[in-house]
Image 1 (cartoon, rainbow, N blue to C red):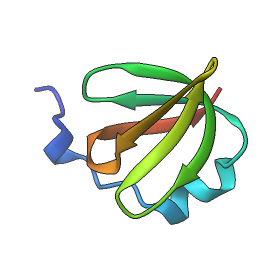
Image 2 (cartoon, helix red, strand yellow):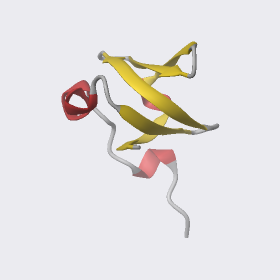
Image 3 (cartoon, rainbow, N blue to C red):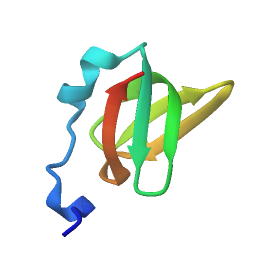
Length: 67
């Protein structure tokens, strides 16, 4: 039986703050982003992928890992 997003504990900004300014892989429900984590707030994360700013709702993020 596969895990769903509902089975995973939600990520919090506190967990993500140590990775600010570092290269990360962000897995969302729809895609994987590889870039630099610039910000994480209560409802979203901000990642720069190449020269593009991407803001993703935190409840859509499955995982964030160092690149």
